[in-house]
Length: 283
Image (cartoon, rainbow, N blue to C red; front, side, top):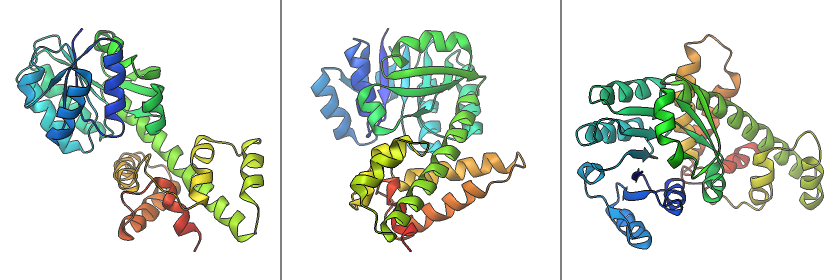
C-alpha cells in the first residue's frame, strides 16, 4: 500500500510519522511547502508540489482546517488518483461537505471516508486517536492499514456523513466539559483552594475527565500553549450548531460555548489552547 498525507499541522505531522513507521508513507503535502519539504526530507519520502504527486497512492489522508480546504484538495485528487483509491478525510467539517466530497470522487470510482478524530495533540503524538468513520465498509477495509497506524479505535458509524455527525456529538461533550472544568476551577481559585490538593482530589472521583487531567494544572498556571486552539473550537462549534439547529434539540451548551469562544477570539486568544476559557470564567 502507498499512502499520501496532506496537512502536516500539530495533528497531521505525527499521524504521518506513524504511517511512515508502518512502511506505508509515500508522499506528504502541506499548504506551506517548507513544512512538507522538511518532513519529507526527515522521513525520506516524496514532498508533493501538487495533487499529481499523489497519483500513485492507494490511500490519501487529509488533515486540514476548513471545509474549503477539504473540497479544494478532493477536487484536485479526483483528477489524478486511480480508480479504487480511497481518500480519508480526518478534518472536522460539515456533513454536507463530506457528502459533496464522496459524490465528487464517486464519479471517478474513487472511495471516500469522512473520518474525523478525537484525542487531541496527545492522541496524535501517541498514535492513540479515536477515529469515527462514515462511508462504505469496503472503502474502510481498503484504508484500514493506514488508519490503524495512528488509531486506538476505529468505529464505522454508518454511511457518508456519519463520521462528521459523530464528531459533532463529540464536540458538544467536549465543549460542555470545558465549560464545567474552567468554571469549577475558577471557583476553586476564588475560594482559595490549593491546586496541588484540589486537582488530585477531583481526579480521584466522579469529576475526573480528560480535559481536567491534561489541562487542569496548566490552565491554573495561565499556560495556554495550544493542544487544540480556541479558533478551531469556534469553527467546530459553528458546524455543530448548524447541525443541531435542524434537529430541534435544546442547545444551551452549544450556544454558551460558542459565545465564550467567540469572546476569546475577540480578546486575541484564537491561537491559545481551549483551556484559555478559564480567563473568561474568572470574571
